[in-house]
Amino acid sequence: MSPATYLTSFINADTFLILVGVFKAIVVLLVTLLFAGFLSFIERRVLALWQDRYGPNRVGPFGIFQLVADIIKLLFKEDWTPPFADKLTFWLAPVIAMSALLISFAIVPITPTWGVKDMHIGILFFLAMAGISVYAVLFAGWSSNNKYSLLGGMRSAAQTVSYEVFMGISLMGVVALTGSFNLREIVDAQQYGWFVFPQFIGFLTFFIAGVAVAHRTPFDLPEAESELAAGYHTEYSGMKWVMFFISEYVGLVLVSALTATLFFGGWHPPAAFGLQLFPTIMAYIPPIFWFITKTCFFIIVFILLRGALPRPRYDQVMAAGWKVCLPLTLFNLLITGFWILMHDPVGGG
Amino acid sequence: MTSGSFTQSLSLLKSIVWGSASQLRSMYLVFMHTFRKRDTLLYPEEKVQLSARYRGRIVLTRDPDGEERCVACNLCAVSCPVGCISLQKAERDDGRWYPEFFRINFSRCIFCGMCEEACPTNAIQLTPDFEMAEYDRQNLVYEKEHLLIDGVGKYHDYNFYRVSGMAIAGKPKGSAQDEAEPIDVRGLMP
Image (cartoon, rainbow over all chains, first blue to last red; front, top):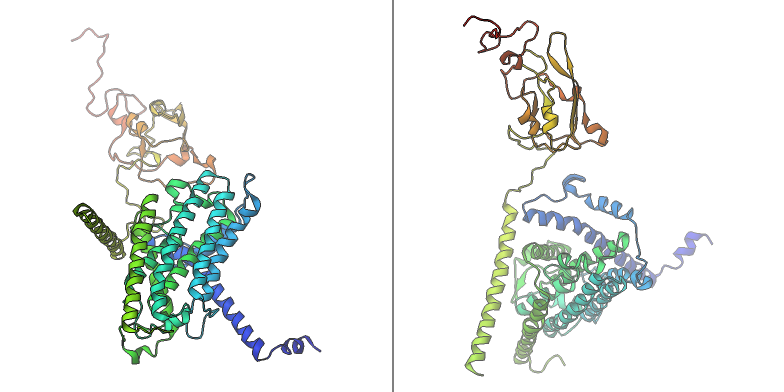
């Protein structure tokens, strides 16, 4: 039996579907990673635009090959493990940082036909992975054996745990309206009206929590460079540092994609309260366009947040989380539940 | 609920609303910078506009006749706070003094312009040019052939030997501009 026929003998209807699934997963992984890396360039250019500068514009047209130059530089840097560090944990932390957020992309439905995994516990899976990504920062902060790193790690643990509490609750309004944790069903429930309108408080609090979970300015206290050197990744260099760096951008893309999916209709064109905007024209625009446009819009908003807002004090961050956002989300959940019971007292059973 | 706690929670609500509005306003203001002109000068392509009196690369100028102005008096070397100028005096057959060598170490020079102020003959001058970067530090030591230019610099008509009383070949004592005939101090006549 020749190798070609040996290989083709494995292909039947089931294995073909598996292969297609694997192919989709790899494409999503690569596109996400490349885009996250490219964001480091986009962010610098966009921030520069808002600060009346140019940013990196030397490598290639408009500087688009800056990423290549950065990667070459970082590859040649010494990948140093400090002798005083806890080796295993020190090496484990960037791996967790990178993988926990990347795995979360499995649940994001990109178009009606694209997406890695159609999970029934979609949102819960994301919350679990966001919880695990805290370990990355905690491990990095602890194993570096460095006071700044430890402070960064501690801040991150407290901040992320606090913000994940109401992040979960803020999404429960959406889940209650849809009656499912499955993101694909949540997107389809928004065909005739985005959830941002009935769930505006939920959207606001989820967005704030997303900023905090992705460690973005103004909630970048774990790595507040003006106070803590580089926070939890002070001792990291070379490719291990790159993994933290990229994971921050992966988190940014993930939270943007989830905001677009959960509150802004995912691949559906604009619609509110049962009214669709130009449904005949919109039918010609491919769903991927809407998903990418919405995700990019929120990424830009994230960068604008970073460009515009100062970093609050640590106790202010905690107070805003527990005293303002948590009551708001609970209030939102209460109102949503009340509304659902008013209109559909029997419930979905 | 007492009226005190009611006003407290009212002021908290007010601060939240006011704070959020303020944050949104600053986001709007930052976003509007999209449409502003950028402040950055793309340097190697766009040149910097330097003022005429900018203190940059030092040159040695010539007088309007094309002769070296420097008379090797060493005042520049003395006035230099970092001691980056060194020169050696020599004399020509016609009586003019000139520097045998003139060396400025630009890796030390702080471009303060003291040498220019000290120079009695307007020979040494600072120019609006700062693009002097070198890969090799030794190349920052400029010799006389690097410093001497063919022009007169900032002072177009000034010629030291034409205004000073110094006698050189072809210009005896008393023949400089506004210079009186020398007085014979040993003479008895009034």
